[in-house]
Length: 318
Image 1 (tube, rainbow, N blue to C red):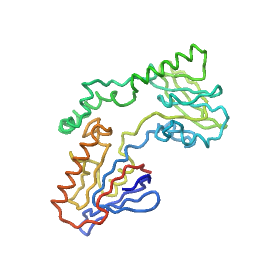
Image 2: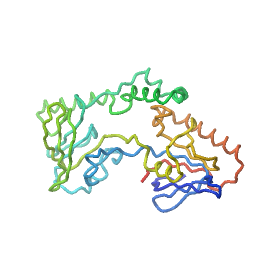
Image 3: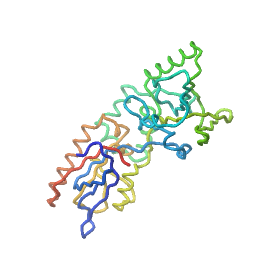
Image 4: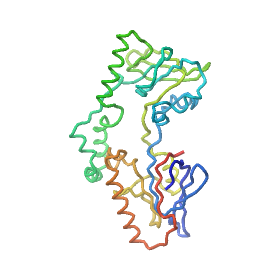
């Protein structure tokens, strides 16, 4: 197992008949690992809205690029004025340090700006490992219906305790007549550009259509992750000649022909394994399922294997 190294690429290696015999994983440092059994758990790609994708990386910081202390790793080298101005998309970094000269604006498209998760002890049971079998057996339309109903239990929301804390902060701001922090609701960012050392956001009010500008030094994104298949897995699927990415109940990537090598996908199978697939709630059971599948595959296929037999990669995909 390699730790702390990004994964740049994964390619299948085939025999004369075209069957995949092993996977060649290339890491960011240029080294490679050959394995018969490959488990990918890199998570989904960060979601950067198209309207902001053209801004310099030094000006846009996704929540995945912040340190454990909540400070963006890029901010230290950002050129600009001493009193930095921050814009936050859909709520992020609520407890970051503020100075008198620092202005912050939070932009959200909901009426109240922020919403609480809709979890309860009843909906929590749909995150249990025992629910995976039931969900997997639903037809595709039924799965999509369940995922839509459960969306607000895990996505685009925050806990009630965090909502209370944020509301208290804004309430105390009003009492103290502070105006260096704003929550801008029912608003879309419809354009963005960098000009004269600033990021200029074009804001469009969803209720009135009024267009205004918000000028900031740095934009934080709390926009979550892209639903599309992660780029690392898409590249692997293309190299393996797969028209689509599909997995079995035990998370094995479906290949077009019997192969000596096997790949497993973790955390990206909500469409077939339920909304808990990206969470810790199913981690132990999923590992159990994958191990059993590997053992069964090894028993059924006596093909000789390389010395580096199993690779587990949970680092970042470049």
